[in-house]
Length: 219
Ligand code: ADP
Ligand code: ADP
Image (tube, rainbow, N blue to C red; front, side):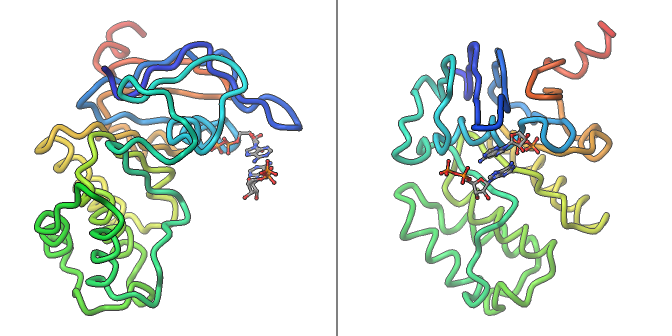
């Protein structure tokens, strides 16, 4: 099964539709950019993939399973904008938390990612720079050994250098381990050099979706 398949997917909040008529397939092994202006429906789509939000219309399947609202698919890791890392925890304690919370946890891999990021294990998360904190959050997400890693606006609070290293880490790990990556941004330019698949969302509708090289030939 592909990481995500959606048919006729829609989500209506009290004030109206945030997503409509969404037909989508996220292919395995790609780095997928989910791009659209603020309010386009990116977080809403991600919320339905995680199962946090229930669709109003249509169907969605994650690795062939319908999200049941009782927690995310075990092969999915999700980094939200809020990056819920306890600031008073050290990096070591943060990884220990990951280990406790996740059955398939790979401690050696998580540690390797922290070492690559040159973040001290004894540092409290709250003292780290935005880029370092994101790299620790990535280690925490990738330590689960997910097959799909989703990131909601992971670059929003970062300086240009941190953006580059975070993207580089993402792409390297995705390629090395065959992880499908779905990351959102309201700035296409941030992702155009790293993504090989693009989904463009505006006003709750998918306007364009496909492999980048194919889209370049068609348009
Ligand atoms: P519920 O349906 O459980 O009452 P709410 O609609 O109150 O949930 O909101 C759930 C979350 O979404 C809250 O964190 C809230 O801040 C956020 N939220 C509410 N309205 C909006 C909005 N228009 N845009 C973005 N986030 C919103
Ligand atoms: P994006 O992630 O692209 O910025 P969202 O999915 O957060 O878009 O929002 C899509 C639309 O749905 C917006 O109009 C937003 O205000 C609205 N919205 C998002 N969350 C909620 C919520 N919990 N309750 C009501 N409206 C919401």
